[in-house]
Length: 164
Ligand code: PNS
View 1 (cartoon, rainbow, N blue to C red):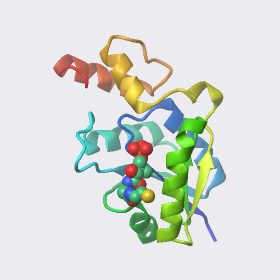
View 2: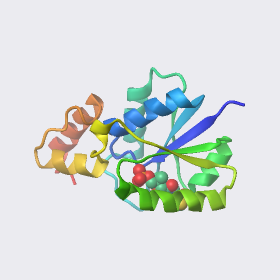
View 3: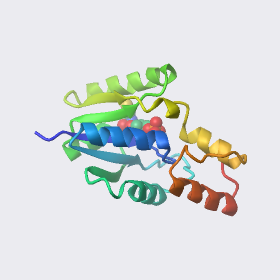
View 4: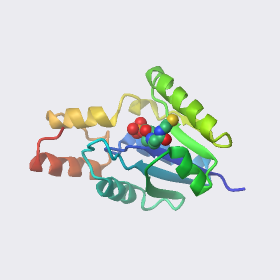
């Protein structure tokens, strides 16, 4: 049976750490769906449509990578898609506690779905979407840390409004 994995997240914005995990996932699983959370109650910097467009732009050429959005419970989406695996990236020990809680809660809700943790390349282990936004807003360089498309979109956002 083909293994379908779902890699969920906010991706606000997509970083090279995410790109690294997605590329690794695409090698490991038959198909990987990047599932962008529609954050109804948060105020993301990039709209869902923008995050979708960016991810599709970056992964347009990988045939077994699909980009989608979801809302509600992650496990409901995973089961609806008939996926067997949830992929999450682990950068440092500090990520572990919350990820462990989520994995066990998801396991309780959907016992047949397994969470697989993947480590990005070491050079990406300190990157987070939150830090990227902060550093960029304060005039720091983020090239090499995010896809070029993200950098240019950040520039457009900054020109239109101060980045949060
Ligand atoms: O990129 P993030 O913000 O770390 O991703 C978090 C995400 C989207 C994986 C998590 O918030 C999530 O799964 N949200 C959907 C709602 C849900 O299922 N919550 C219970 C998780 S145990």
